[in-house]
Length: 304
Image 1 (tube, rainbow, N blue to C red):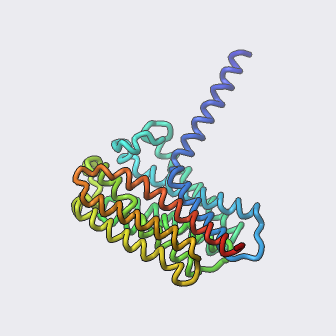
Image 2: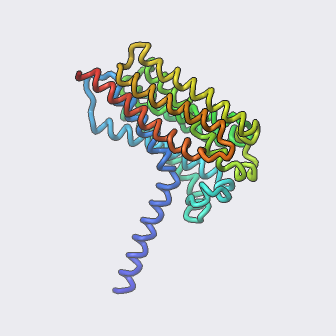
Image 3: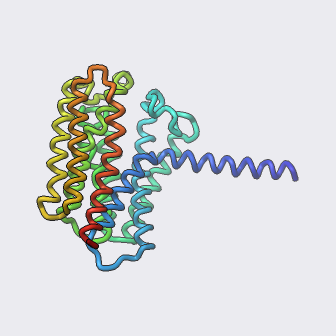
């Protein structure tokens, strides 16, 4: 009896560890940002009524799709992950999951997420989710990442689509505001990721990944970050000047963008690259605060 209880406990612990490993495989930090922008796109979309159960399940399907893309990325890049300090503790490098398990999980999750979103919402939203997964896996991970320094720039489109998916899940149509939000995330991606690439420069060099700081130099990369941060400001102002947002959005997003530009300019003169992780971490906060401000502005326009 004691032996049976011990085996039962071991089985439960193994199951918990396995589920935890699968969750880590989905890149929960990246997934959480995608979910948040999708939720905001969902909430600010015009609708007469919404079934909240369907809404929650639809967002869950998008979350699963985002996690599926992350899982397939981990499957393909397992050889790089094992030597990078930032990724060496992921499930495959540590032996908690095999590449085959990651591949099966990623493919099944992709299929389930797209089909679920189709039945819960509409074909357009499901198609955009499928495009997001396929673009991230095949265009960014397999094709671009190890071939061009523009990998992050072009590949950023996949991470930019969640607010549009959230919007179309409600409306079944594409409108100007969600397209601008897609553009904003697209322009945000390079200055978000390049400081991390500079901080991990030697590791990327060792693995032969042609990140922008390696291909064009650190100074050139920092100058392009300034360009992108200025373009990001311009794109962020567009919703207000098109009459899609109010003054709260204008003031809060302008403040965020001006500080982002200030950091990028300061980074240009940072010869020791000490600001790398500060800018990287702020860029994550920027995206969260930007979409939060967008939603708060929506509520103010709706109720005030």
